[in-house]
Image (cartoon, rainbow over the protein chains, first blue to last red):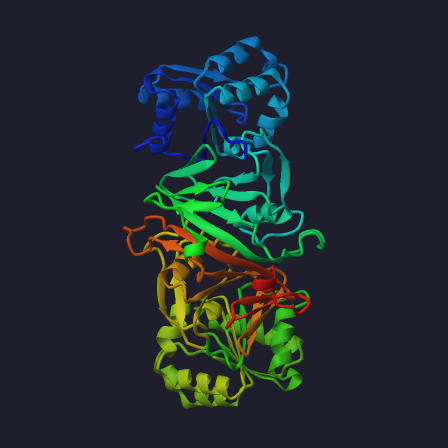
Amino acid sequence: MNAKGKLIIIGGAEDKEGKCEILKKVVKMSGGRDSKIVLMTTATEHPKEVGDLYIKIFNKLGVNQIDTVNINSRHDASDSHYVQLIDNSTCIFFTGGDQLRITSLLGGTSAYYALHKAYSNGALLVGTSAGASAMSSNMIVTGTDDDAPKYCTLKMAPGLGIIGEVVIDQHFAQRGRIGRLLVAVAENPHMLGIGIDEDTAIVVSENIFNVIGSQSVTVVDGMPISHTNVSELGHKEPIALTDIKLHILPKGYGFDLRSRTPILADGDKTNEEDR
Amino acid sequence: MNAKGKLIIIGGAEDKEGKCEILKKVVKMSGGRDSKIVLMTTATEHPKEVGDLYIKIFNKLGVNQIDTVNINSRHDASDSHYVQLIDNSTCIFFTGGDQLRITSLLGGTSAYYALHKAYSNGALLVGTSAGASAMSSNMIVTGTDDDAPKYCTLKMAPGLGIIGEVVIDQHFAQRGRIGRLLVAVAENPHMLGIGIDEDTAIVVSENIFNVIGSQSVTVVDGMPISHTNVSELGHKEPIALTDIKLHILPKGYGFDLRSRTPILADGDKTNEEDR
């Protein structure tokens, strides 16, 4: 775990027309009217449309200083103007698209180090959809939706490394992704699986996350797994797993990432000993 | 639990053209070439097509005595000819369709008591898809696919009561149904949730089930749930649940329904104490 800064990870399709609960939280944690938001549109192949959409919404939510940083090549990622915008921002917001574009174009560049530095110095980092996946050290690239967990059906890659020891998945219930998250957790149960629904987000700070938004967060804890055959299978064979622990956490609930303990809506942690 | 007879519950879409693993098992447990299979097509609105399809397959698998019992009204369900066919069968096979047709047309009729009697006397009972759902005492009628578990989104009804203390769901991974099964389990964690994938079945005998077929069975054990807010919510609000236990069991694995313990492919039970 190295989630020491401020981080909001959104499961995609956050409300942009109604109460905008999640985006309002982004603004609040970025400094309200004084926010300096940098929109990272690298993931999408429609950076202009996506950038303009978020500019319009953040304007409506009271923020005036918003810059789109459309890094479209590794060359762009060393552009000192972009690096300066990141350095001076209070919030770096990764849009949706393809998470592999984020990591393959930014990885190891000046922009990459700038965003890590900004995060360490207190800037809020935000990712939605592909931007959400990219936040973890081990990132899901693709997998099969609405399917049983199966051997070799998950493509992973090194993510931005903003938060370690977890695997993030997005559009979670809406695309039937528990199977693919179970594959990731089965492959190394040390990694906590975090499945974030659409219009739902986790706000991470000091190794605690809190859930906001209209749907739920599914936590897949593989630590208690007592049996698995994941290393013994052929291609696409279904995986056996016993004694997985699952938590379903809607708005108001939280989770302690170090102790792997849910935090109830009234602030109490569940206590295994007391049950 | 009252699964004292022989029972095969199929998650729908069982292979009918390739190796026919599941349907071969049906034939084997019905008495092989001496099987007397009664096809219960009540669930479907296309009884002729569905009946003929299964007759063709079971013929191919070596069975000659197959009768379609198309009970299409409560009046039909008292027909003594149908009752006699059920009485004399070695296998009663419920096809897919709408599970509410099965229970609303058969419930409390002569055919209903005949099939319970046949099951008690050793006939194999089989249900696929809607026929699978109907087997439990508490039956899922409809719910939302690919969704977070939410209050009041599940319609349940009394099932045929062949197997108690469980809730069966079908087309499980393929339709993203963990959310709706979690609702059922949350509402009464005494009930064990059993989600059966397509082309996958559980063979139940003496309160043990074994998995056959190409995909997986998901067991949702709500007994360890330490917190839930399911009784405190408004319509369609997402449900909080902590410490659910999950098992993913492909072919070769089994489960002891009384002790709620997975049985590994080599026959060993996992032992919580030994972990």
